[in-house]
Length: 173
Image (cartoon, rainbow, N blue to C red; front, top):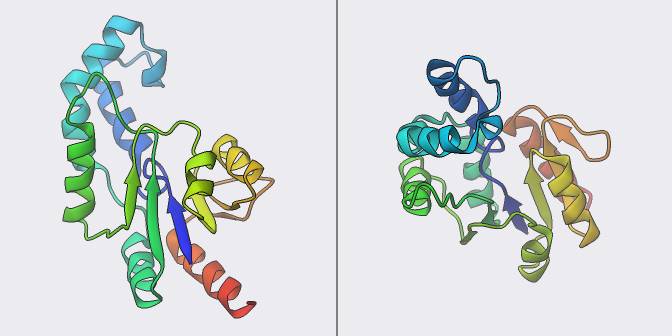
């Protein structure tokens, strides 16, 4: 089975870490993407490396990767990551995945519309935190799982639940 996976807020608590830094620097903002352009660029240049190194893995990620390895799943990361204001984004991401023991078969950066890439790579199931991304996936007939809340797709709060879901899927085949 080929599993496609997003990174930010799917395997990591990205938003939680970013908000911590944002509140330090710009206490009046709840979302860094709403910063005026100059402050947005300054914020990313100043904190991106440090934030990325501090992202915590979501609950059950390590165990999910153990399950994937034991069951010979192929893992393809498809992420929108590739920040033009922080040139080492891809390198830092690869180092983070290695440091956390998260193997993968392929990784694609700078993919805001991920469905086409998943389809080309024959992804069976894609896991993301954004329903809009999953809608794009579904248009390519890729089965979807939401890390978080969705009214359209199977939704889970942690990776332990995803493991159980995948076990049930495998038993149903």
